[in-house]
Amino acid sequence: NPAFDASTLDVWAPLLNGGCVVVIGQHDLLSPLNFQRLLLEQAVTVLWMTAGLFHQYASGLGEAFSRLRYLIVGGDVLDPAVIGRVLANNAPQHLLNGYGPTEATTFSATYEIVSVGNGSIPIGKPVGNTCLYVLDSQGQPVP
Image (cartoon, rainbow, N blue to C red; front, side):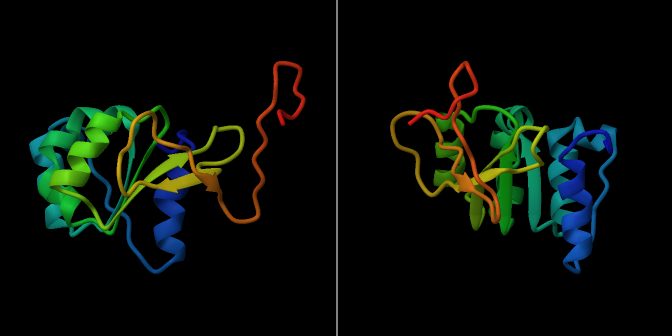
């Protein structure tokens, strides 16, 4: 959906870096089996998924996940249990938590997830040429 902020990453990042874009129709996206088949047939190497879709489809996309160079998941809090299962069974080469409020950009911070400890998955560090600030309720920086 071009109205979704992540479409800037989905479309322009591959095209500006010599890659291609695979467009998957709604019918195939709504079926984990069809979605995985297309990811494998098209030899997709980088995939961005919302946290909700990732959580729902993680158990059914194992083979496709294991063939990815990058799996970027974000848009909401990630479930450490689901992340742990993917890392243990079908880990992509790189699994990233992509964080970025729409008002800033697609991703303002990223965190490469290599293991899951106790607690939440961090949002990571700012992307290049970016600063992040934690503000209090009055908009003042928190120490």
